[in-house]
View 1 (cartoon, rainbow, N blue to C red):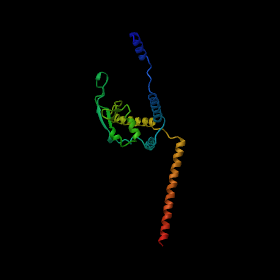
View 2: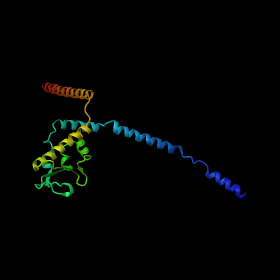
View 3: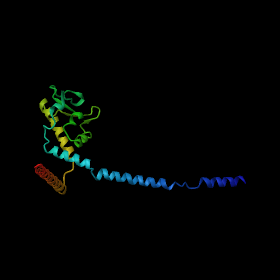
View 4: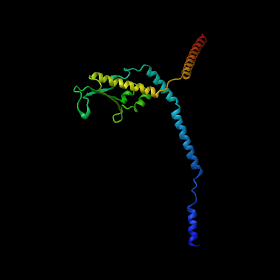
Length: 204
């Protein structure tokens, strides 16, 4: 065998196309399809647990006001406002900084609201808390109350953005379910009462 023939055969061997196993490409296709399905489910539909959380949040929000978050859960400190170049523009230290630990807020709001607060611009990851500052007023009390108001507005914004409303069809379905549950409870009570009467007659 000549040197040229050996070189030609070697060249042909390295130029052969690489054939991937069929199962590998098939698995990749199935994996992509599965990811697409998961993405659609997470974005386009809600689970039963999600709907239960939404119902809790809707009921909670009907009575939500500025007194829902107790003042005792927060801590407010005051300092002098700083102007351009770090100069003090307010000598009375009226700037209010209010902090709410996320752990404390967990007990006074639904899970879906508490979870979305972690994405709020007021959330501070290093202290795992909500921090709101205000120096727009001259007095300490006004600035402190303004920090509370801003938290209240932020919670309202989060609720409207994360909790979907109930459609008329869903509302009608819920009413029908409540009626059915009420009828079933009445029938059970009626049967229990009837069974008691029968047992009393049997005693005699």
